[in-house]
Length: 487
Image (cartoon, rainbow, N blue to C red; front, side):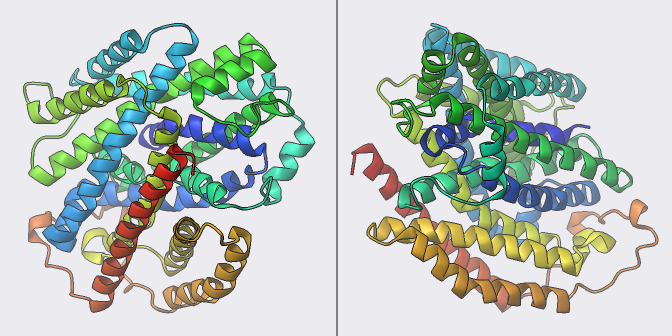
């Protein structure tokens, strides 16, 4: 156990807790079904990451630079650095809001949390860091009593878990929240963090089966936790004046105290702080790992401060700057958190495309390349993610468009395309490689690999997707400004 469980529980970070609670407060349990749909997305993406890390022994950022060139490497890592920095800031937002419920000033709680994170990480002992993360993982299990204390209607919750729907109908704001749910549950930083953490833990192909199990368990834990938070908020605010009026996570805790009791509110605040610490550690490490990959510096928790000064200095700097930003007074913290999670959702298809292409590179993975059915499944998932982000883009440009009708139209138009993608993936399987020695097969030294074959189709796909993502991100900013100004 290790990278898979930590990365998944770290996914239920401050942004996750806030987003799931927002869904519960504003839409009840009507969005629980999204949790079920995200299980295969989590498992498919992170299973590919496990294979890449164990077989290549190289971080994700370096593989992108080596196999796609400096232009695409810079594009991918630049987006990651910006998103990760904003995400780290949301973790300290969570710490500040959780501490505020207990009457602790953010000017006290945030610096203490920042110092704790740095102290946990710069010890030069991977095993010590991992054990401390497991302590926070266990504390995260408080989400289960959180749901129980809210006195949920089990029948309603189960119905909404298996029957898709949306309280109040599908709208642009609902699309924004669903994209945020996707973006906080399946994130680009997970790809970079888990691959580098697998390498840092020195997992080899022999242990891939165990790490797959670790990842599946982590995916189930994160989805159960997300559902529990959504259920707790839904039933705590059900039938109250606060239903449908989310502000931020502190407002959730205060509402739980007023409508259910101080016990539920205290548990929620503790879960929020705990999730923020796990998330801040994982996301900051993902950034530091990627920085080390790009600039060729030592980037391992096995190294001491003296041996890996740039790695630990970057980690410390990111923590300090992100913590400082949160202390700016008057910032709309709830909207900021939702916007960052939505940004992650918009960047996810591009990150998934790079991951999918790398996992079909026989020079890297040899007998561990994707099977044809796996490519088909991954292609369908990526198409669905793009469809969801397209809904957000169109409803932002044309607010009068009925989002529900648009969903039906896109499903009718893109459905056959997704089926065609699946069929093509099944027909054009990667070249077969002898699998007799899979457990002992490792990628040769990356400097000795022949460059990948040039593909016009691949370049067009990357160019089209990146152009779309840039437009989508700009429109997300427009949407965030509209919400902040009340339009």
